[in-house]
Image 1 (cartoon, rainbow, N blue to C red):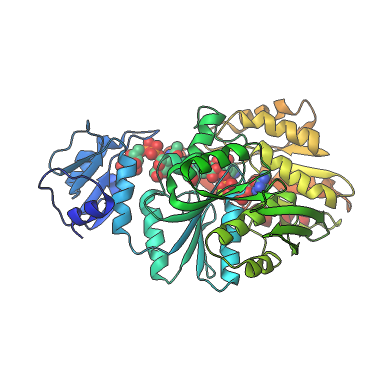
Image 2: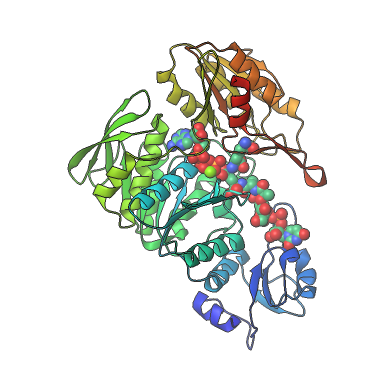
Length: 485
Ligand SMILES: CC(=O)N[C@H]1[C@@H](OP(=O)(O)OP(=O)(O)OC[C@H]2O[C@@H](n3ccc(=O)[nH]c3=O)[C@H](O)[C@@H]2O)O[C@H](CO)[C@@H](O)[C@@H]1O[C@H](C)C(=O)N[C@@H](C)C(=O)N[C@H](CCC(=O)O)C(=O)O
Ligand SMILES: Nc1ncnc2c1ncn2[C@@H]1O[C@H](COP(=O)(O)OP(=O)(O)OP(=O)(O)O)[C@@H](O)[C@H]1O
Ligand SMILES: N[C@H](CCC[C@H](N)C(=O)O)C(=O)O
Ligand SMILES: [Mg+2]
């Protein structure tokens, strides 16, 4: 495809007389082939501009980079925001894409909402997919990409690949990293959702306002100008999110107890043994839904997913019917085993203080005895959340066992000590994750519940970094079953 054609469609200005035949796009010089457009970005670790000569040597014909970058031997597409310009150009190359695309952001619940949205569409007869932490998921398979929001080239290539397979509806997860690095851009997004905001990633974002601002790029720029913002109304940050959406001129669909008259209002929620009964008001009618999932947080996610489907043209009767048939999302309050002494053992992906509190609260109504939590915190991630997670476990659980998550480059004992410091002496420490899970299960009786938090669906434990990095096979669900047997 000709570069001038891509640039015209993307509204990108090229240097006078520039033309080339484009065969692909890359942001890593090691993936450049002859005819590639290379995006040279200043990163958190290294400066992509240092790889421009190597990219040109490998055959790059055009480089998207800051005006100040030095480019010789290829077309320099100079841009003040190279990531955005690169995304716009690439989006013209990776076509066609599915007709109906929606996105979800928020600290917790993105994966669950994206997955539930996909399920609701599928039950309505659409070919649907979700892209996020679980990978690219269709009715047939789930293929992991390694990151929640893949890099822009993988993301766009996945989108056009799905369209070629006949997928018409996609829900994707927009992490704050992804949003601030323009990892998903250039597509028509008909609706975007905001679930909630609480402490996470303060290693990457300067403070909560900065973190929130990164998320609000979704409403400010990514969702189409005539699209809809779906907002969970019962969060502290909801009103601010609604204000952002209205300022941009988006339609707003609220969900929750505090939803407005045009929204999905949660009238009542009654927890049961295996699920919960919801009364939801929509368009003046109150409907009853038997949600087959436990936990207040899954009600929130299900309603946000319903909002995304309604906002993108879904039929209300089908949506409410589908809510009653939702399948659990992998690693989100997944019941992994029942131990020999009769203790249910749950695996959940809670890895923030707020999520840990939500997961414990979800299980509390089902627990006549003690609630025992096994958890840790990832290395090379926000350190400030560690004592807060310790405090939540010490206060909300009956026994908290602090163990290793993914230590990455950090010393695991130091990470545990930071968590323990928040627990004020109330927490126990068992570093080895398998031993910690075994200890919790051995200790629990038939009225107790064990919650293993932090790794959810993950299949390995990441130890070390760089050349030393190893992923040791580890699956909480499998280990729970082995220890329960
Ligand atoms: C901090 C962060 O988000 N880093 C991501 C980001 O890096 P960056 O742009 O800062 O890149 P960099 O490594 O400094 O390199 C700069 C540029 O040089 C290029 N390069 C680099 C080396 C080389 O030899 N050649 C080359 O061309 C790189 O491709 C890049 O374009 O872009 C890279 C390419 O897309 C990502 O792999 C990398 O993810 C790292 C591995 C990561 O751990 N990210 C996590 C924190 C993350 O993004 N997590 C969120 C989840 C959050 C949530 O759900 O709560 C996610 O969306 O997955
Ligand atoms: N709406 C919610 N409110 C509070 N906590 C939630 C909510 N939804 C999920 N959680 C908690 O957060 C955990 C992760 O859920 P999920 O994977 O859906 O979120 P996510 O936003 O995709 O996370 P990540 O940032 O890792 O991609 C769950 O296992 C649960 O403990
Ligand atoms: N998407 C989240 C996942 C955290 C999962 C937890 N197990 C950890 O490794 O910290 C992150 O990258 O921060
Ligand atoms: Mg996720």
